[in-house]
Amino acid sequence: MKDKKVVFMGTPEFSVPVLDALIENTNVIGVVTQPDKESGRKQEVTISPVKKLAQENNIKVLQPVKIRKEYREIIDLNPDIIVTCAYGQIIPKELLDAPRLGCINVHASLLPKLRGGAPIHRAIMNGFDKTGITIMYMDEHMDTGDIISTKEINIDVDMTTGELHDRLSILGKELLLETLPEIINGTNNRTKQIDEESTYAKLIKREDEYIDFNQNTNIIHNQIRGLSPFPGAYTTMNGKIMKVYKSKLIDLNKTDIPGKIVSLSKEGINVSTKDGIIAITDIKVEGRKRMSAKEYLNGVSQTELIGITLGNGKCE
Image 1 (cartoon, rainbow, N blue to C red):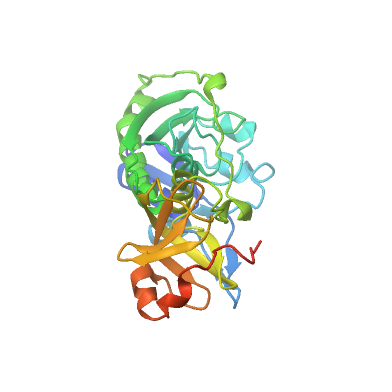
Image 2: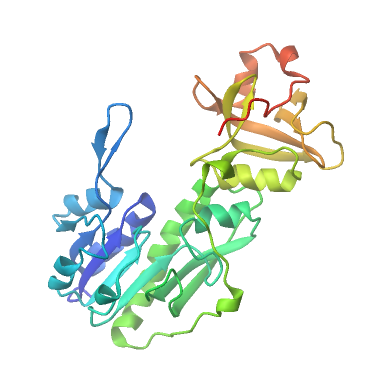
């Protein structure tokens, strides 16, 4: 495969193992990634993880602001194939049609389930017990192209998005390396998606992050782990924002006023929900660093916490 010219399009950390595998096994002639961003209080310019890896390997980097209008330079590279993975923009038909072997995408779900930009978060938030990687041909729409190959992975009941992200990233690399020779040889499968079975993984919004303790315990647990570690679910405690990164299901029979701290234990801060009690075990209170709930409880008056209701003073 070393003689095949590849353009890779991707941006976040999730894409890095895929690009790394392509660099090792093919001739990556160009990398397309999102423009550099200013971040933090000092508005320092940060580059994407994909750009960093490309620069380390002396690969040409292109960063169009709007790929729909700025694709000519990519076509001029004359790649045999374009591989995308979490790039972040819809690719125009002119670019899709350019490579001899087509454009393929490494997507973090079992299509047609969870098309869209947040399939890892939504798999956990929706309570899925499995997800996976799909390698597909790209078309003009979002994640609707023909499926080439898939591979499943189980989702444990306490698995976080961060943990699933890392596993799927490696799985994507492995499946691509298994599938790419078949694509090059023209022996790969090509299966149309069943649109009637499709679902969509909408991008996470601020309102998705707020914990509503009036919901069932399982829904809250899935929300917390589905948003951990990024961007993080949150509530408020004594008027301060409290990010919640991990929780544990401890009692699905007892209940009290939703959001009320009913007890403190070695499990963490035990909070009532609509139908039970959930233990909050990993937190970051506004103005303090992230820590286990046990560590936090060692530094506060525990008796003052019992009976307060989380979520008063909801922050948008």
